[in-house]
Image (cartoon, rainbow, N blue to C red; front, side, top):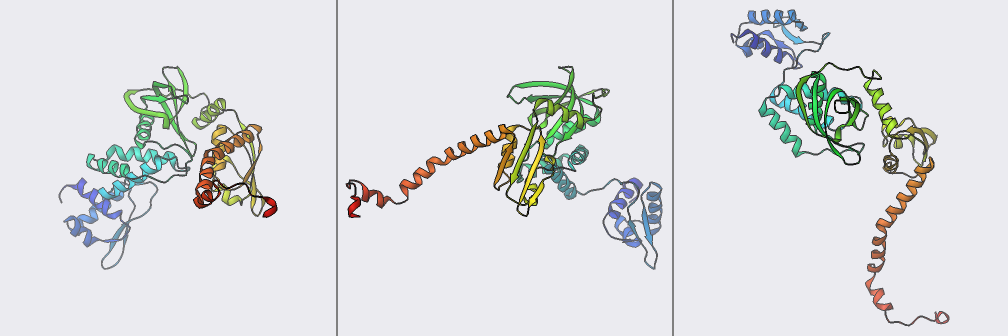
Length: 348
């Protein structure tokens, strides 16, 4: 192999596998002399790759952890596996690694060959993850287009569906993507409204980076997460929630989003939640019902009233089933009672 850059890339790819390579084996793999391997190892070290050499009759080389992350060289199967995993994670806001996974996915998909991009899409379309229902799912393509526009400082065009169902076309200067742990938002300067806006990404469709560059404006709060929080608070009145659960705190906390806040342990099989929430009344009621245990809502009054009406609706939704069950449980008994005169209590 006479192409030095290509040989160095192949050598780096081999060294990234978790094993030690004898110099003679590397030379055989790359069809060069052991002396050439030693020179190439020195070149990699000059480029900042920490390659360790072991002493002995055979001698060997391995790549160790350094001060910086080296470029990863992936084969086709590895690239597809990572892209599919990142897409699955990006489509559901995974708390803690959400924004990093979107950035990584945007970088990876930018350099994926078309044949691998097709394989990734095929696998993604053929599978469906089981989710806890903490938020709406999102097309990973929408996230990667937005992430690339944020990084590249490109103006973005997209269609947007508001909460009341109204459809609009928007052109904006994307500032940041923010995850709340169960939902994605885009913080951007809306050119049509001439003001800062937040957009729920699950309501965005047809995103398109126009290629027009812009100089980022100064965000009013200086922090995208803080701006999003204040924006949500303005749109939704806060609810001071007080709920008791007839279940251990660990059981309940595992079924509620971590962003709601800590639970107060009141007994071995009981706990209490006191938190201020800016989510909709309907969403709060749904999350409480999904905990799958007995609970008592103490405050606020509108939540107590909503849960009461919700319980009545659910009961009515299954009322016809109970009526049907009673009339079909024992057809013979119905036949025996038809046409029979009322019984005389004194004879029974």
